[in-house]
Length: 505
Image (cartoon, rainbow, N blue to C red; front, side, top):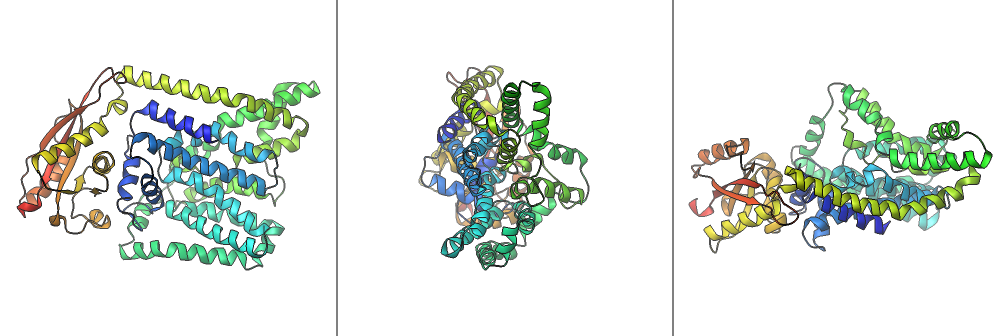
């Protein structure tokens, strides 16, 4: 699994040549400078993860991609631990390995954000739930503390995790061991730890006008969006399709060959029954399906408006469910199936490496904007230019185009305070801006490729703010480009910088 994480990190770095086009990863970094208990949009845990990672590792695109897949690796270890708690034996590691043939754990995982952070947390929460109710004495108490802490980390990553945690309830109430657990002190210890760990964030939110909760509520509710509901409903199939087909079709082929029967009817039977529960108290089924079912229920009740990327973390137990069900249906061929899947492991990783080079070549030859965007070169040029024009002065903050403006902090001046939009906006205040007059700053607007030289919405807002504060309106325009053997069709990008000089105040 560690080798797969390295290969995918390298492939994601080679194939993209930039971080994501929506600047989610730069946004994470901005929220980690400094670490805080909340932001104007999201809870803070994935910002903490980003900040702590770059406190240890070099600050560049490759190591950011490595963070993305280190996060996947932690999640896969959690799936393995969950499989062991479910007493799946030799199937447990394959419940994790098969997920590396599913889109959420491979190409989608390359963009580290609130959704992908949950890949590492949800499986451990489920594993610790089972550990808490299976163990007694001090071991059970420590696992309960871990359950409370990891559950709080889930909520501090994305409030959507509340549906996953609520999904534990059927598993607990319908299984005899779960009901006995409820009669012990352990669940209440976990609940107390959960509440204590969340308390500082809740206090921060309450003292900052409930900003993250307001943002979350503004993202959905009010109407049923059938387009997104249908896409979310089918996400367990198309996001996990390669792993599901590889497992079920291989199992069916070996089972049909062993019995001398027809392959196609056997394959259809296994594909269908791989998803089914094994009784009303089937803990694995409820863990696997409740996040999906509750998400659809809340969307139909007009409480949330689903987004397809929300389904990225929901399938952590899918492969365990398939493996458990298939083994019960056709137990004799299980060793052969796992042997054949293990033979395919390294060829698949080799194919991933080759495809990364192919994708990079295609992006380079067709002049893909996302591939050629000179983010790092532009950040270095902008900070260097500012230092040249303001010798001996310290750049204290950057506003403007959120979250692309965080490129200055990530690539050129670590720990530079990055704020959304104007430095005296409410969102900037939540970013611990303080008095913007106390230090030199600039407003950065990303205009895009050279042909897009006109003022953007960011430029207009920056000029209005500067005029309101009697500051110079003139933009300092810079250009940057990427070239070299990886970039055979160089393209020039334009960036507008508006100085906010503390000395003028």
